Image 1 (tube, helix red, strand yellow):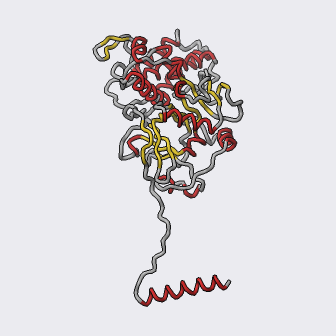
Image 2 (tube, helix red, strand yellow):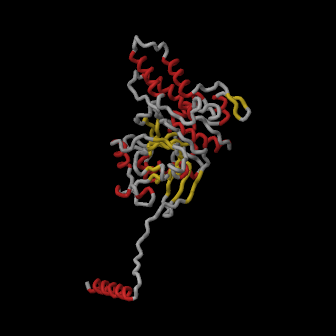
Image 3 (cartoon, rainbow, N blue to C red):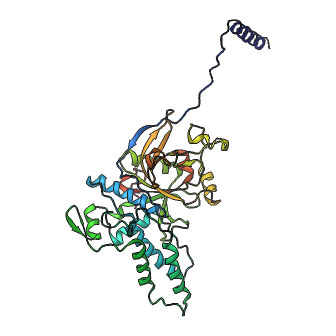
Length: 383
């Protein structure tokens, strides 16, 4: 008590002296830290694009991922047609919807493996050969695509005798031609004539080289399983590993020059394309602040991650492309993630990229797709 009294007495005397001399008593309070990022890893990627008014982020992100893969192996940066893969996937979805007699989702959504399925069956096209834009359109707009397709499919499924739908496949093809244009049978690229299959061969892509990793506790680790999310219409397989392993594998891939396709939830207020940041503040009251200033983030456990998935707080919202790693001034690491919402500096931060904290990644990631050659020794035997 005596020591405390002495401290207050000295502080009072000092205050009086400063007041008498007209001085200002300064107290050092820690300043709030605005984000200041330093690049750790930055892997070559194509220019940021806009998916426009479509739900086709899965094709834009995975096509960007494949573009980086082609560049890594051949040195060529090829602008892949995203809509060629989208069109082929609409046809695959239509078949699935008919065979399941309409008892499944039919939407614009998809996943990274749907692009690989399309590439394997139909090959690849460059953007210069097939843009998917009709007439004078400069922005993708699929607002009417799914409603028109589903109308035809539902008539066929219900076996409406009064409707004239002699062949739903022909009708679907006709709608897609009108909405997205008809893909060419052959095309020129760098002076050479290709079709979609020969163009794929030229890129040296092998669709069997890729694996999708995830982490959930409702399935055994180190096994493949079908993840039950609405957009997994094609019943794609996911390889289940621990949450720490998932982060380690992403880091390992990036450090060895490999990018990854990312499927995650972006519905949080703290995912901001305008600010170019995605973080997970521990204090909900700091959500707005966290878009500009460093805050303490949540500790994400496998159990918390599972809980948020099962109560639908973490859903399959959006796919993007992880191309690098940055750190803030405190050494905290963030993934550099390429988005597909354009790069308009008036509404998009970081030139169309989002810096995603590892805490946000651990909670909100559904899965990542990566080249099997990018796996660490712990997972290299997975096939």
